[in-house]
Amino acid sequence: MVSMIERLLDPASLPDPTSTVTLVQTHISSVIVADRFVYKIKKPVNFGFLDFSTLEKRKYFCHQEVRLNQRLSKEIYLGVLPVLQEGERFRIGEGRGAAVEYAVKMKRIPEQVLMKSMFREGRLGIEHLNSISLLLARFHSEAERSKEIDSFGEPEKFKINTDENFMQTGKYVGRTLKEEDFLSLRGWTDAFYQKYGRLFRERIEKGKIRDCHGDLHMEHICLTEPVSVIDCIEFNDRFRYSDTLSDIAFLLMDLEYHGGRDQAAHLWKAYQVESGERDVEELLVFYKVYRAYVRGKVISFQLDDERLPGMEKERIARQASAYFDLARRYIG
Image (cartoon, rainbow, N blue to C red; front, side, top):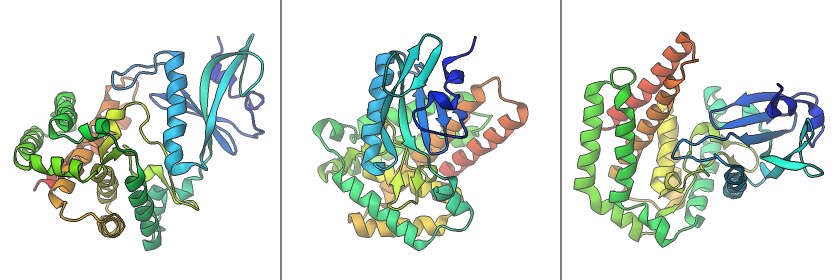
């Protein structure tokens, strides 16, 4: 039986003319890539921290994805379209038929404008770093703040995230994570809350806990005109409501992971000038450790897919280990 997604790969099923259609599958979305546009359809999955299990929830989170991402990429996120069914036929767009799914419509982004590609090819210049720092500083200063959002900056609440990290990565000890590093990082993290709990509370008092991006790494930054940032976390407020320092720490860590220490240093200095951040080095290191550990964890999760070939599992394991190693190096 031909699936809905397979039928949508027919150019006639899409709302805009296209000569090519390809499909990219992630663990949470089916992404239909046409010449000029991309259509993302959420999968009916429930991972606990993410629940797309009903059509109503998928519709809601499609609208959330557009609303939240338009804060940093209004020109890319174009809206939500229904996936309509008439008999055996499926198509994306308005018209006759029952809505059986919903799709986020985005402008297609050329690979060569992604920050990760520009860095890898040696095309990432000081002017790009300055533009990124200005955009992020302005975004962080204007992002929503409330008493509820402030509560996510409390050390007791943030500790839920780090406790969850260590609980979820225990099974990877000996595979992607050395036991001594696991114990050192867990001990260091718990001790940090004891020693520096006041720093978290000071950040709340300064209004630094905001509705941030949540997944701020180089693959999500588009050096278009103007600069855009895509793929924020729409599916769980807990991962997005955070200290602005945690948001920028993710990008700094990602640059350092890929060997861009000089670029990270420049970006941080430029961001400090634009944002007025001062005297936050201890907390910045904490958030870099947290972000590196999360990347190691998320990549390790891919090893649970039994369908992966052996060589691919080895590559994924090396990548996850490198992030855990970076987290360990940050703490000395």
